[in-house]
Length: 232
Figure (tube, one colour):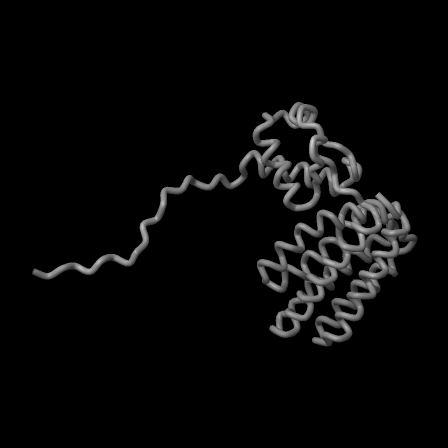
């Protein structure tokens, strides 16, 4: 009698369908934007009852959304006290820029090593749009373009892990940009820094690109530290 070979195909467990835009995801995005834009101040406590009433949602999905932001580091849980927006003090800002610089430097190096740096023309397009806002160098539009430049820079690397880490960091960085906008009194400084990075990328000069990126990060860090408290 011939015995049929055992199937090596694993039996797949039953899984629930994925909801593209679940309520907790939508709530998390709304809270994320509010934190990034400064509608919730650093260190402010978030109260479930008030938030649920304001958003028109039940506390179950709200708790799940707040847990997501806790995992991202945007909210901090204090035992027996509740959830608070992360503090934006000097140690936090320095660590934020340290991590951001590491991710963006890795993206630059990867872009050049893989030949994807030719796509940095997308960055030059953003720079030109930024230049068009010469009349409002400290406006929210320029800060949004600043974030778009750096998000695009990392997205071009096509590294899922770099992109994921960077997205989380950028929400925290936006908290900084909200406060540092007023430190710019002309557009050329911002334009020149971003244009220099894009030009070095297009030229495949990894040393120049990473040097200019580091200088840009140092300038941003100085500007943020000028407007945030030294201690929590």
